[in-house]
Image 1 (cartoon, helix red, strand yellow):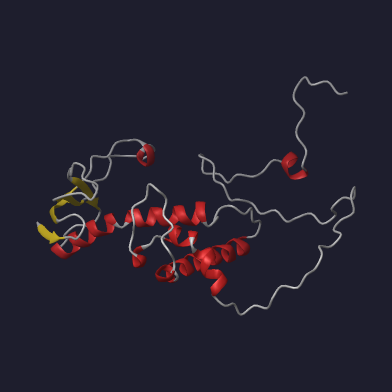
Image 2 (image 1 turned 45 degrees about the vertical axis):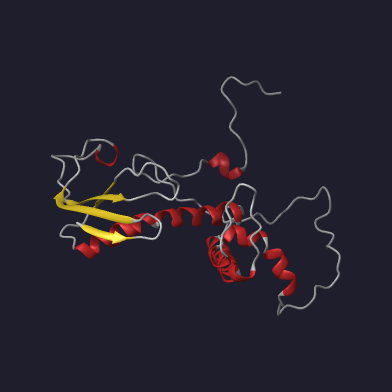
Length: 226
């Protein structure tokens, strides 16, 4: 048992028991397992806190780790990592919904890697600009200190910082867009398509049918030709 004084939850008490295993059933990943089910030993942690920031009922949280022989410092690291999962989930939500990580439809894997690097650089800029941004909060949001603003709040006031901050790039030159492809003409340079790499439930790789590659749809049985 370990006892830790935290800033948000008060006194946190963690009780751990080693060499305990979950009761496996023949479902999901173990549905096709042949022979008796294995025994996977681990460590069970019961975490209780003195209070919650929201004022709700502080029920105990049960955690399980696949490692055995955990020391007191290991138990504290396990439940601290569990609390950090909320930050990870909100980070992915910011990257996808706010910064548009999954918005473009990229065909090349190298382009997807470059776009991922741009998104991570944008998030780093929001973190660095946190002390300089104003807290433009919504009416239902609580005030926060400047050094603890979330990236989403920094993004609201980032347009005010962009005007004052310098840039190494030159001023854009006025120009007009090109004429493009003439109306009615066909694009003779077809884009390269990359297989997704799906795997069916039978374990075989998924291949796209021929009519999808040619861009045509199969005729239904019994359909009359016009």
